Length: 274
Image 1 (tube, rainbow, N blue to C red):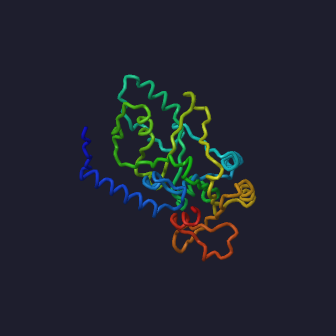
Image 2: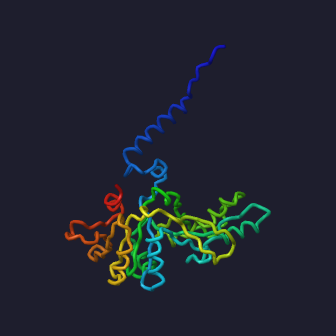
Image 3: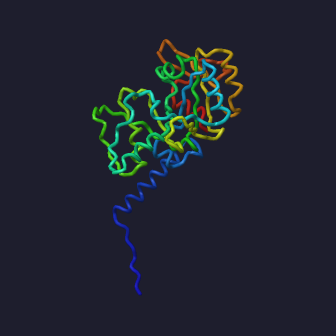
């Protein structure tokens, strides 16, 4: 029996070369050994942030819970602050009741890729009196998905027969008015359709990479939070540079302020991601 020698097509040769070049680029550009090829290729932010208010005792307790119990509360969709959330999907199935029941089970964790946003510090951290917690995205947070922003008025642009795809599209699109948030989401699921059921996103302690203390945070609250921060977590203060209308970060306890200011995410990545 004579075996035919397989000859790859020109397309297969070009595709193989492209993949090899892309992988070489990944090896040169990845910020640390733990960054996976998929993380690099999908352009996932190296840190993802959760803004928190801490002025009231219940808010402070929940923030301490994040730091000590390594979990983030996932909100039922009905409590999201955008009144136009949802309504994106025509679910192409006779069992529309199943889709509605799954929506009630849906839980959403909202995060931002930007820790320098003045509106976010104002809206979600009580006018810079709160904190912003930054998480490494190389483990549990690697599954974050970016919010898609659109100006389409008639939002029924997405159809799905697959229930999982329908839920993801239902809560991954918002109006461009919200684009300043640079939001990423993790979508979870409760066991029942009861919206009072609490659902948490669990992560590992070493994924808490950084905590940023608001410029106007109460001193006593600041001390309580610092006491609760995991030992490997870096602590920064955010300050306003009014000459340039910018926020910058300064590591807690830094002496030479001007030399060590951090104004950009890229510089923060260089400082935090090893």
